[in-house]
Structure formats: C-alpha cells, structure tokens
Image (tube, helix red, strand yellow):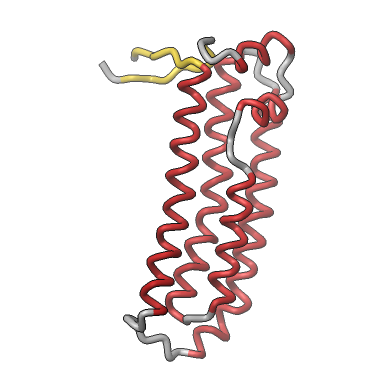
Length: 171
C-alpha cells in the first residue's frame, strides 16, 4: 500500500476541512429545523414527548461533553507516548475525530428533539454544544500544546512545508 507524505500546511488544512464540515452540518441542520418549526411546516402538539426528553437530552448533552473530554484525554495520553512525529500526528487526527463525533451525536439528538417538540430549550442545548465545538478548533498552537511536543517536533509542526504525517493512498 502506498503512502503520501503530508506537510504541516496540508495536515491542518485537511483537519480543518473535517472540523468545519462537522460544525457546519450541525449549524445547517439546526437552521433548517428552526426554519421548519417557525414557519409552521410541522405539527409539534406532543407535550408527552417533551416531558420525557426534558430529562434525557440534558443527560446526552452532559454525557457527550464529558465523554469527549475523557476520550480526548485518554487517547491523547496514548498519542503522546509515541516516539515518531508521523505516528503522533496520525493518532492526533483520529483523536480529534473521535472527540468531535462524541460531541456531534448529542447535538444532533437535541436538534431532532427540538424538531419533534418545538421547545427551544432543546435547541439551546444543541447551541451549547456547538459553542463548545467552536472553541476546540484545531490549529498548530493547540496541537503542539496538546501533544507536548519537544522543540524539534514543535519546529517541524510549525513549519508549513515540513512533512509531519502520512496518508495511505490506493494505487
């Protein structure tokens, strides 16, 4: 299997494309459900659903945020133990994707419950996750801090033309 070497600039471009794709998906879905709800295109006369979800959705939101923090820290400790920078950066990308996925699920769940009930509290919970999501945007500085890189590796990551990762490609 062939691999393609990825420079720091390409690595963070790819990571940011993934990040913004996941973020914009949440925002777009929230906007569409908000529009449909406010335009009266859907009937939301089911208060029994609201009574059930008023306890479930906050658990998912808190669980998603907490789970993403714990999973990120646990995976990060394994990633930091790697010796090779290329392995660290590959694992870091995976760690970020896992973190984002653990946040995205409760966000979508809260938006769906808002759509079903029309109660803005659920949309506010999704907005809370989206706001937190905005604060964890990947960049060079956060990566070097997260991975506690030594001077040599930090210099490579900060150099846009330095090869810091590899990607498997099909021939």
